[in-house]
Image (cartoon, rainbow, N blue to C red; front, side, top):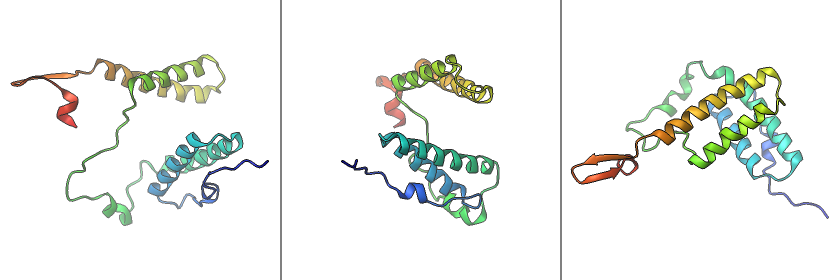
Length: 153
């Protein structure tokens, strides 16, 4: 019996190269990562990781380059946006990320160069985790104590 998959196979054929705009590369990366989460097939997961890795490798060197003139209008608004990108996982999930990276480092399964990158990631995650857990939650107002989250959302 054949296994039916709902994977978007265009992910495996979508062309990208060093000439692809960074915005398109970023979109590809997001699609690869999202589909990776949704897939149950080990071969598909491996292929998606390979595509994601290739796309990330092309994206990384573009990060310090100026935005190409043909994309400037895309990044220009007349009003402030209602939402800006933010990394805001729930604290239990963030704790799980920290624990998983720590366990990965403890396993010594990574080459030294990768372990160094993961140590940096772990530091950033744990610092964010600690800041999140220690962040103020309420503000004294004339009306009494109000949740800060209510004031900024």
